[in-house]
Amino acid sequence: MDDALEIMKVSILFITYNHHRFVAEAIRSAMAQDYPDLELVVCDDASSDNTRSILEEEIKRCPPHVTLVRAHSETNLGLIENFNRGMAACSGDIIMVMAGDDISLPQRASRIATEFATNPKCMLVFSNWIRMREEGQLLPGVCGREKDQTFFHGPRPDNIYAGGKGAGATAAYRADIFRAFGPLDNSKRTEDRCYWVRALLLGKVHYLAEPLVKWRVHATNLSNYRAGTDTTAARKRILRNMLQRQSYGRQFRKDIEHAIREKLIDQKFAERLFRIIRHDRERERLRRFSLAVAPWKLWLGSAFRLMKISPSPRNLLRVSFADLPIRISRKRRERRWMKQIRKGRS
Image (tube, rainbow, N blue to C red):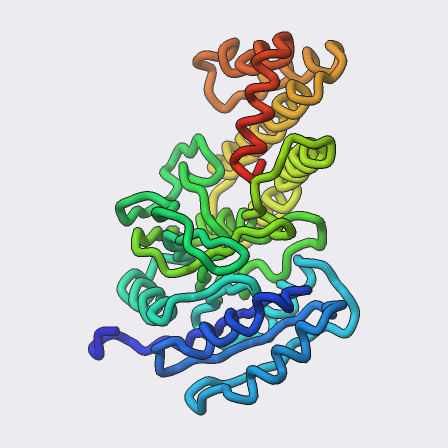
């Protein structure tokens, strides 16, 4: 990090649950960060395996320049509540999130701190990543875009994410986001999409093309799980994830309403975002109805609602009926199913 830049305090929010096979390597990588002002906030969500005891053994070797904070839960709270508790326990200017099954490269904290220090309007930084197998072997190539990018809302947004898509495993947030909006509502959602939208309400999101995280692929990972065979369980999981994505709008609306009250955005801008949220929710419902072969009454009702709430009047029929071939053609539908299953995520 450039000595001329402000030294910002970085908190590593280390979230873990039942990661006994991976957590030792993960916590070592957190403690090995080459950054001078570091806080390590460890949040085990009442793991039912020996994750906690492994953690305690490893953090006995925590280096002196790292301030250690234990924020464990004694009962299982779930991802969002554990995340909220951890965010509240962090005292840094920057909160770098890390899971107990991934590995942060040694320069991750320094690189992220530099990005925040040189870009005052940046609220969220995420990076490229490398995928690795359960056993630690690296999968070929990196996964994100090849060039650094910046995402922000213009005066007339047409996408709630400003055209980007984050990866929570590589994310770091300016602590101002949590101070401005507070904890997330408890649900089965993941935190990354919600914090992405919060960051855009306050400023900008930066993407670093440099890979800074090794993201582990395994069967129980929430969002980077191993691609499996075509089973009933695999298809149900994909449909559940699609249903989950429909629910993000509730948190988005709450945060946008808060931003209006705090005069962070104006009403006209907010109304456009509200329309995008309704559109995206209906679009996800229609995709789910197409894959699940929902009754025509449900499918057509969703398609026509989508037409009415589109944020853009152009190509309404094409957008609303884009999934019609999936709904009516078993062959096309099976191709879509296999594409989703091969990706190892929905």
